[in-house]
Length: 61
Image 1 (cartoon, helix red, strand yellow):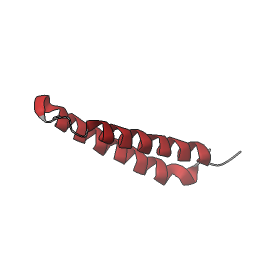
Image 2 (tube, rainbow, N blue to C red):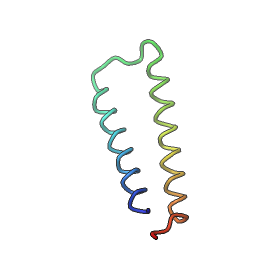
Image 3 (cartoon, one colour):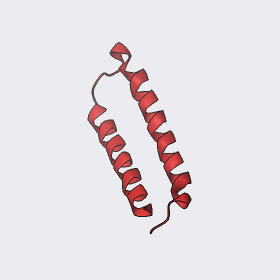
Image 4 (cartoon, rainbow, N blue to C red):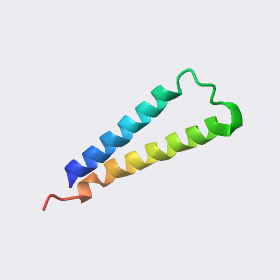
């Protein structure tokens, strides 16, 4: 189960890096998109921290 958590965290990290790379050069401050993007980044970071903290509760069975 711990490997599943590792893969999930790595997948989230990869997706956020890809999102950041795709936004380079795009004026995304208009329309409130920057606020939405920043909120998403915070929420994903919080999820990753929670998954990492809960890793000890998962046992390989």
